[in-house]
Amino acid sequence: MKSLIPSARTAVGIVGAGPAGLLLSRLLRQSGVDCVVLEARDRAYVEQRQRAGVLEQSTVDVLRACGAGERLDREGLAHDGVELSWNRHRHRIDFPGLTGGKRVWVYAQTEVVKDLIELQLADAAPLLFEAPVGAVTGADTERPTIHYTYAGEQRELECDYVVGCDGYHGVTRQAIPDSELHTSERVYPYSWFGILADVAPSNDELVYAHSPRGFALLSMRSHTVSRLYLQVPNGTDPEAWSDERIWDELDARFAVDGAWKLARGPITQRAVLPLRSSVTEPMRWGRAFLAGDAAHIVPPTGAKGLNLAVADVTVLARAFAKLYADGDASGLDGYSDACLRRVWRAEQFSYFMTTTLHVDPAQSGFDTRLQLSQLDRIAASGHAAAELAENYVGDAL
Ligand SMILES: Cc1cc2nc3c(=O)[nH]c(=O)nc-3n(C[C@H](O)[C@H](O)[C@H](O)COP(=O)(O)OP(=O)(O)OC[C@H]3O[C@@H](n4cnc5c(N)ncnc54)[C@H](O)[C@@H]3O)c2cc1C
Image (cartoon, rainbow, N blue to C red; front, side):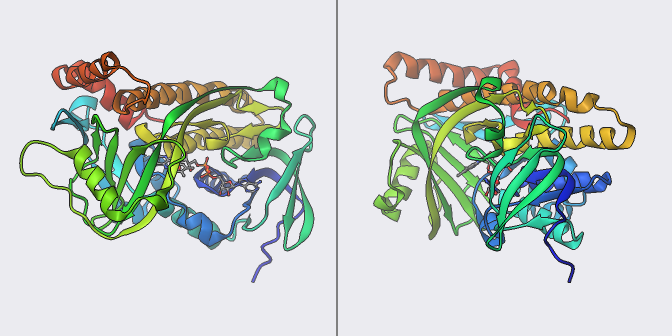
């Protein structure tokens, strides 16, 4: 078997094998650009980390075009709408009708990652697990260098360019002087308590519920696995809640007039996720680039995190292809501005969805009436519904 340890030099060094790093590597290899991916965790951990599950059409198009669409087409669930729930009734947002035919897909991030890893390994592309990067140096020189550990040994990877796809807590950002970066951030006064349950989803489409008790989301991973979320106070211990308490609270928040009932089943995973909005800009300095969560975080209410990561690396891969094929660096020079336009749109939409649907512990009765008025407006106005639908399904890439 070919040694997995890469040579000490590559064109593009990629830190992190989440969706951003794996997809970037796949796209670069398809363009004939040499690259290496270094990932801190082991393969099983990366493949099982429960996160996003809604893919925009443009994300699906990119995955299909790079050969990662086969299982997605077989097992992914095409969704033509979502439902909003408030005041004990629901309103459906019809995506194709409001956006000229667009839809989204439900296919878990874990599965996207598994598909991309399988392609990478089948291709014998350099991808090292359990290879934590300690530092990136020389971002402002011709030869930026990644310092990492593998099998107990300190190693160096010299690159033309380094791309930090290493998430919010990654190290690549530290290669850029603080004075060159600006981070805008908002932390929310509530978290999401997410569960996976072995029970068929109680609705064919996602349900976003505003309730006086707080927000709830009904989502799914497949025809047999439900994914559900509850707004909870920051610092909530997920183990302190019994299964019965979780289901009772979900029941109360999804309650509607009529016969609909939430089906219960064994809870197989539970976790609490704090909500944050954050953008670090610019997304490039010297020969270091940031992509995905390394540059920006959205609260998951708008289902944008994974889709933004895919958009960033698609733009970046095209730019590298242009550079290595024609010596044209204009794509790299325009990378940060091009991505930030999409990022800030997604930030605004995610903020809108979050603050419209959650109950801020400090909010007044007046604030609640404004939220309900906004939801009524979406139900009454095709323009308001279309604004939501267009943002949800996302723009073409
Ligand atoms: C707990 C959680 C739940 C989420 N749930 C949702 C959701 O329900 N819906 C939604 O739309 N979005 C959700 N998101 C957001 C979405 O999952 C992310 O936007 C997406 O994972 C971004 O992909 P990425 O590749 O940029 O980063 P990541 O997936 O974070 O990948 C970064 C990778 O870099 C690796 N890494 C970090 N540091 C180093 C280092 N020093 N050396 C080497 N490797 C390193 C990490 O191990 C990781 O594998 C969630 C995020 C989190 C954290």
